[in-house]
Image: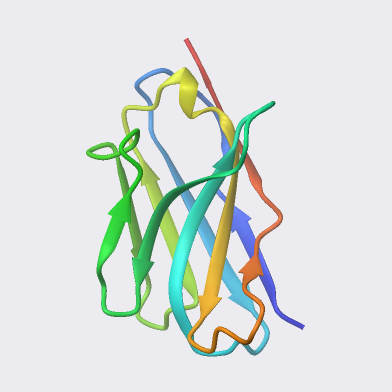
Length: 118
């Protein structure tokens, strides 16, 4: 059974930094895209950033220039470096691995809380 385990969330002041990690345990299918999403209270889940198998990454406009997504060489761990955090970044952050074979279900982490206080 595959699990995505996230870590690195917490409470930080405005302007601070956090680094989220998400590691897959178990046997996973070849992964095409590794992504981070977030969901703030009362809002829909939104895509924050993703990195594709070829290394191309993309970001939501709200985090461009502040967040950086990266992965390890084994492609079983994805990171999200978050700098210059703002209160509006407060949310539960979820990692998501999308297999190359789209007939397979994607994998989701359990979520990690990020709270930014002013």
